[in-house]
Length: 333
Image (cartoon, rainbow, N blue to C red; front, side, top):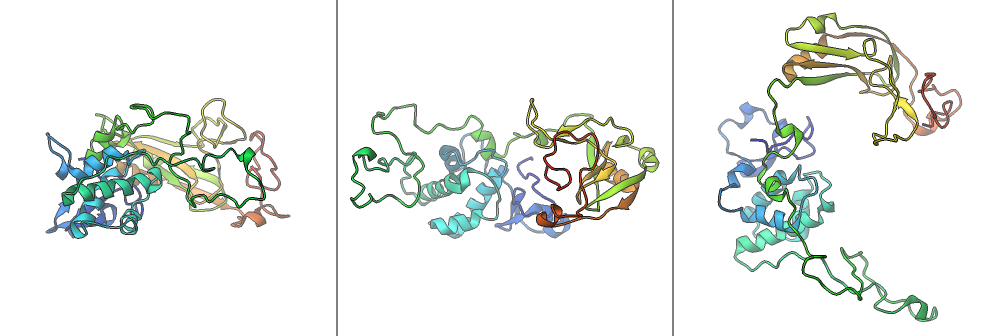
């Protein structure tokens, strides 16, 4: 079972939602002991060999997923909502979806999917999902021919999803909705993402992060971590080559400034990387991180962007090998 996907340790993303006694709940903040004796439902319970559940079918038909990472949670939320309210309005639907943070079409298509599923489950005829077709915003008049003294033409307050040209005839393929190639896999919660697959012999990595906003690492002792059974590697600035790269993460040519290294002897924010451990299990890797002894020289820090550029503010990137920082002294990268 892989449909319950990790979102955050504190559970606020909603990606790992399940139904606990029929109510949407984040599994990331529920202990197994707390779930004992309760009904736990995941999207796999809706899967059959022959057909999709109407809710799954609606999400696939409307294209209500971009990444699809949180689609199982949305399907479960829809299931709980429609059991309590067979004909919810858009405000109620959006309220349900608000607990599942995602970038899925700004929730436009998930709302359409819930409406379509509601119609099917009520036994009503659901209209096939189609892009919204409207007339041109200028009401067909060439703006050149409009007298500036005339009243302005009325226009909708919201931009429609699709404003086609009047000169383009409707077609049977182009401009028509098409089910995503991975839609069935996503609505069923089947393996689709890297984390859904487990490779034999796979090592697990954990990162030790800085508790300080600005500090120099004066010493690091990884001997106890390396001696822990199951640990295969411990990496930090003392044993990793210093190669500068840009923080944008774009492919070649990576735009400057080249202000990052994998591990540095200086940390520049709370949570900055200090060391990484590769081990047989996540638990061993976490324990090894706790065994790494780090000595810090805590440096002055600022927590306001205006103060960061002020006179006398600590220089965050004072290293000599960073390339093309806009204004080093004023902390403008």
